[in-house]
Image (cartoon, rainbow, N blue to C red):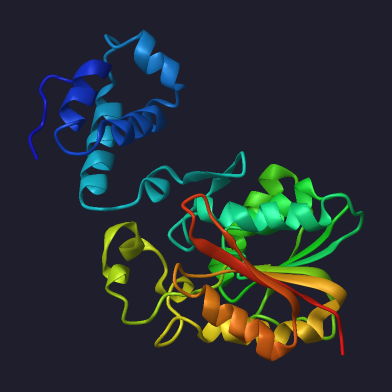
Amino acid sequence: MAVVDPVPDVAGALKWARTHIVLAEARILLRYVLQCPASRLIAFPEAVLGVAEWAEFRSLVERREAGEPIAYLTGEREFFGRSFHITPAVLIPRPDTELLVELAMAHFGDKRGTRVLDLGTGSGILAITLMLDLIEADVTAVDRSREALLVAMANAARLGASVSFVLGDWFSALGEERYHLIVANPPYVAAADPHLEEGDVRFEPATALASGPQGLDDLAAIVSGAPAHLEPGGWLFLEHGYDQAAAVRGLLTDAGFSAIASWKDLAGIERVSGGQWLGR
């Protein structure tokens, strides 16, 4: 990759980067290197980078050109208006997952002391957001990855969220605990799906993406195990793939849930399905 010599100013650095990655991403990376707001790039295009800053920016652009996700390069991603620390140990938060928060708020936003369980918490985005936005919520977050839990715990500490973190595989470490609300964004991609070898997904943890031949193994495990951990009247909400809503509704029906429905994301795709547990 060609190197601009001498060290360029902001305008020159962005001009060079534009030949390798899109301008919006180049601006994000330059802001990260310079630790500055977007307004500084606009107001001072003639500001010359330091030698170390230029070297770091070139390296980040090269890594992005090779496909490495912006969130892993900067270590940050916004979710529901808050900035979360992200590492390759966890999935990159996506806007689709905010639908789970919206549903939780619609059902429990006016209630105090909601007991919430977040399964497969990853970076902790759901658990932390619900802890901060619900009224006096009692939130437990589970993940099978110790590395992911460390990321989630760091995010909770940074954002001032008191969440109980548990290392375990779905419900295995929870004993007989019951909750008013269970949310999950589990692995739901078919193991042989070619999309696993494309784009940002190539860099994300495979164990947090793929789940059996049709992507339904973990969804089925959560649905079947949820009744033993829901209070009567409690709700289960699950994020799933673009073509899995009917299958997940079938799982919920077979498990004895009521008020079963699917909800669409901003693209009009049925992205979350859930139901209410009335008890037996």
